[in-house]
Image (tube, rainbow, N blue to C red):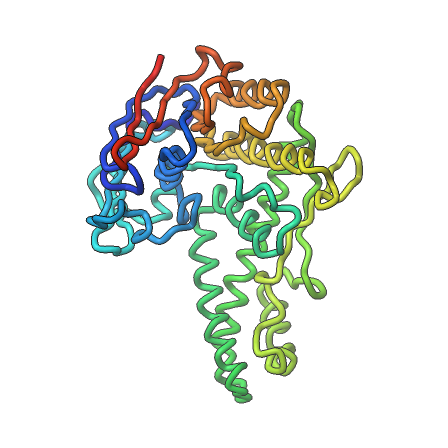
Length: 367
């Protein structure tokens, strides 16, 4: 079974003053010139799963300029739980609200009925950028399996900020640290467990698949030493590290120091040393494996969001990608500058053309 948005309504969202879209469960090919509003469209779709969306933007930044009147997104979602009407809204820059079937809801409730995974051009530098970007990527994969992962991350970061404040102020009384380190250990152990479980699921999904895209061997590493996986061990490690952390003015041990290390399995070459094309292929492989594992875990293929992915693949790889999407039974929202980039899909997809007219984006359904 697939998870699919069959209706999408946008009001004053980014460059879209108004848009009404009705589609079916097939892949959706979105094309049009650069700057027309294609990515804004799939950003709206990315909000239909836990997290901050593919741009990690604040609600105030999603409002159409210059009016900034607030924005609203409504979608009709079909999946294992049947039909759901989901609405997101923000007024006067406030955090977005969520309603499911006219009832107020939170991110965890959203994660029980909707999942999206995505690949965007900004991720192309994943293997050669800093550890923070890879850690964010790993957490996005993890969040797709564990909707409570976001709350655990927020709890951990809040306690760590308070601890860092004590460290910078050279506070030595252990009583000030104990409650904070207890919270960090509890949340940190959950973060580590969720991340490792995610890597294990991806490994299984890759091993079970016959794909044109290369397999990546993945593991979590620490920038300094090893990370105690158990809550009690992490709590002890934090206590033992106080004086060293005080000298640094920040916390030096914990899951916030995790990095994701990848290797092109068939060649035994670190992903960071692979060619640009190989790095892109490894990313696509991970996104497809994420979708495959979610389909088994969630009972439905997630919605895939692939921004400008076709432009970086030759015709053979494009055909392979589209073939895998169709085999998954996934509704994929894909963007590109021209309809010819989706020629290999033919009637297996539906097509939307996005244009810019008088300073606003317009969406046209094409045959």
